[in-house]
Length: 85
Image (tube, rainbow, N blue to C red; front, side):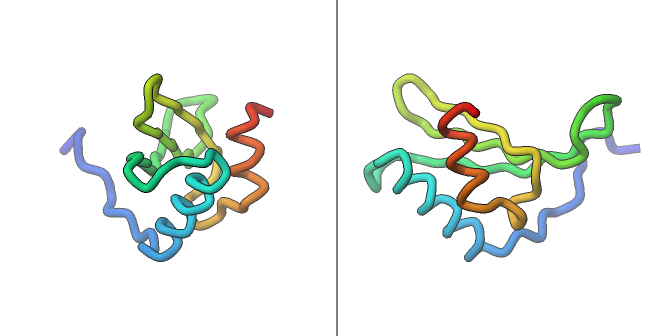
């Protein structure tokens, strides 16, 4: 049993780029700011089955979580996450 392997993501690169562009626009980030987006699966009790973690490498680092797969995230989800609601 390999504890460190996870299934390869099948996220469409165009969808990922569109999500990064939405985040950059909403937060008014410059083109040099790194945005990391990772889709995670959790099998622990009480944990959502899929979560998208968004990390923005600024000072200080900004982190947001959306309990949806990357391909299911809407603009409204991103707005809600960055506004902390």
